[in-house]
Length: 332
Image 1 (cartoon, rainbow, N blue to C red):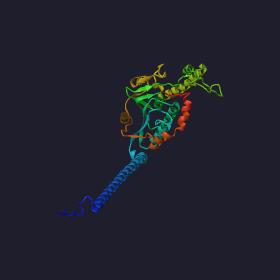
Image 2: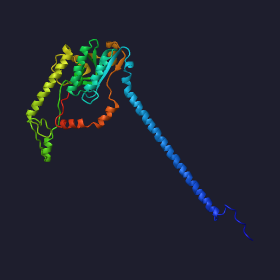
Image 3: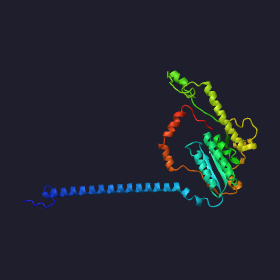
Image 4: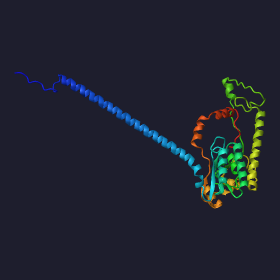
């Protein structure tokens, strides 16, 4: 008996089988290409969303950076107490640099709605030059705007150069637990001459001028150099003490330790006449200035300045090269 003929398309060996295999392979290829295109499209959409969000964040940051300046007239409507922060190290390039603090002070005094001024201080001190600049400017602005009282309000610490700044105010207010004082000047360094001798390392220092290698940390300390630097520190200390006395006047108690560099609690500082009483910024604004609303005139470091710090290393390297041998005088 003869076998029935196989139906087209159902045989595993006929030409139709080969056509079906090719068609199946083509369909699979099209499916994979379509999936890849869809995946790429999704990736592109995600990157698009990311960059849009990034651009929006950048735009928002720029608006926030400029907003206080653009809306200053609106913010300062009505009687208020102006506040300028002196926070952290007082020195060039710092948030509490003389440039920043003085700019904030001038803006505050210039505002017609300012009824009183608060220097809100939380600083261990820093550069005597920068502190001196701020001290002089506060006194100049006080003389020019006699109707605006100036108060220093000390938070956790108001020491050395920070107290130098506070002494320019009409009155100083502290917390009982504040750390206040440290009226002194220092220069610090390290000496490596002994270690170098043990390691068999020679120091080859050539100078033009007998004292050009003053206080070189890799050379033995000469007594004449130490005596000279001590004299410089005494001179700076005398300037510091003179300005504190000028600012505080007869309120200072006659104590031999007052200008010794010691630091006291806020409670003790009131007893010594270094401060006038206890109170926060809110207390001073509400009870003394009689303008409870406060407006912050502190100059904030913008985004561009923060980024510039990471790239502007030339000045820092120059200072570091010199400060490696001799640190700058410090009111800390």
